[in-house]
Length: 204
Ligand SMILES: Nc1ncnc2c1ncn2[C@@H]1O[C@H](COP(=O)(O)OP(=O)(O)OP(=O)(O)O)[C@@H](O)[C@H]1O
Image (cartoon, rainbow, N blue to C red; front, side, top):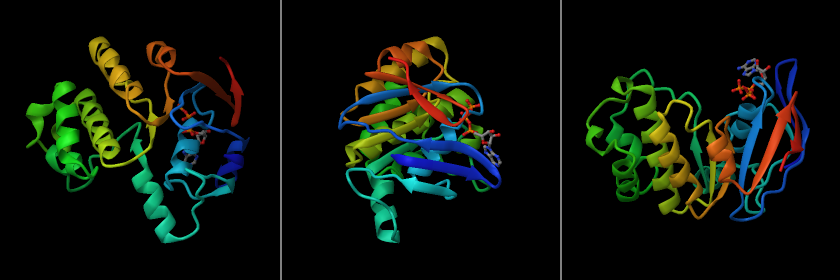
């Protein structure tokens, strides 16, 4: 990222951020509530569009629909508050949407939600839904994604689940950018960055 600025209307949520992530690097992004972490990650995957500056993944920017399609495959996204949608998918359909159902199913089993595949997403608990999204992200990776962007992926999990999820996420052969307030997750990362009022600084 170079000089990335993200706005919500008149509000500047991300203020001139620069960030280089080396291939395979695991970066934890911490910081105060409302400091712009979610907005910044959403900008990378095209879910936030009021953006200036430059964001590249694997050296590629995004101007055309084809470039956005490549970006969505290259980046697995784990949302903070996953929406079940108005016509909720079954968990099985969510897992299949990552591109490798088998890989996602194996992860779902490891994460203890392999028995919930026929359940509509809106019937899952917060922690079960978060585990299912994590499993989907693993399927994205086995289907070829080289980057995982995760927004507080362990926030709804119990202690054992937090450990397991952190192990799964940080064990993936990807470049990882994870927003987290979870010290165990941050401790497994190579670098910890802190965001405050839209700006990034290195912590460790
Ligand atoms: N849809 C929106 N419309 C207007 N303002 C928004 C919107 N989403 C976020 N904001 C504002 O943008 C700023 C950054 O929000 P963001 O969600 O990126 O912060 P965050 O660091 O992820 O916070 P948290 O740790 O609480 O999840 C905040 O001031 C927030 O109120």
